[in-house]
Structures are given as C-alpha cells and as structure tokens.
Length: 234
Image (cartoon, rainbow, N blue to C red; front, side):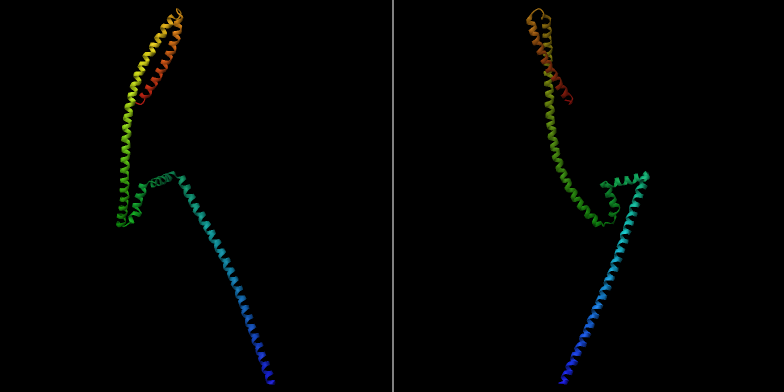
C-alpha cells in the first residue's frame, strides 16, 4: 500500500513538473511572438515613414522638373518674340508643313527613306487602287454635271430668245402707247382753246385729261420694263 501511494505521489509530481515546463514553454513562445510582432510593427513603421519621405522627394523633384520645363518654354517663346527674324521663318515653316504636299515630301525624305522597296510597292499599289476608284467616281459626277449644265444652257437659250421677243413686243407697244399719248395731248390742247366758247368743251377737256394721265402711266411702265431687259444685254 505504501508503495502504491509513493508511486502515485511521484506520478503527480512528474505531472506538475511537466505542466510547469509546458507553461513555461508556452509563455516563452508567447513572449517571443509578442516581441517579433512589435519588432515587425516597428520595422513596418520605419518602412512606411521611409516610403513617405521618398514619395515626397519624388513629388518635389517632379515639380522642379515641370517648373524648369515651363521656364525653358517661356524663355524660348520670349526669345522668338524678341527676334522676329527667327520667329517668321519658324512660322513660315510651320505653315508650309500644314500643307499635305509638304508633309508627304517631308515623310519621303525622312521616314520614307527607311522603308523597303516591297513596302513602297505595296503602299503604291493600294494608293493607286484608291485613286482609281476616286477617278471613276469623279468621271461619273462630271458626266452628271455636264448633262445638267447642257440642260441649263438650253433652257437659258430658250429663255434668252423668249426674253428678246418680249423686249421687241414691249418696244412695239411702247411706240403705240407713245403715239396715243401724243394724240391725247393734242385733243386736250384743242379743247383748251375752245373751252371758253362752249360748255361741252369743258366737259370733254376733263375726260381728255384723265385719259392722258392714264396713257402716260402706261407709257412710263413700258419704258421701265424695256430698260430692265436692256440691262440684261438682251
């Protein structure tokens, strides 16, 4: 019985010792992990602060380079403005470069020199195909416009002939109205000479005056129409 109690006591002591060792190991591990985490956080903070400093330095460098670039550009503009003999040729060169022909010539003298003969032939073949299609379209459009112009010319010729005939008729009528105007004026003058001798002459004189005014108005209108047609070289 004593041996059993002794064995049990030794077993309990062994268990306590093992538990103490395990607890110590756990505490040691936890302490190590906490230290490592703290060290990692401190290192991360240092890296973050270093990154912020480098980013600020890079932004400052970019701003400095932008200021320098704008400064150089402003100096160049001021230099050209202060020296027209330089600015005018540059402006002329830019104007010439705006034309398609000048750009094509510049392309051939620069980039075009490095193209292979096969590429040149292939590009020329494609452009010729496009040009051929355009030329065909231009030919069809030209035929339509020529037909339209011919029709308009025929209409103009017919209109010219009609206008010329109308002018002749207007001139003929103008001549007849002129004769009537002179006749009405003669009647009015005859009635004026005898108006005191007979009351009937006075009545006829008023009628003759009205007719003379009407024929004068017609004559003036005809002269205006003939003059308008004459301005058209008809």
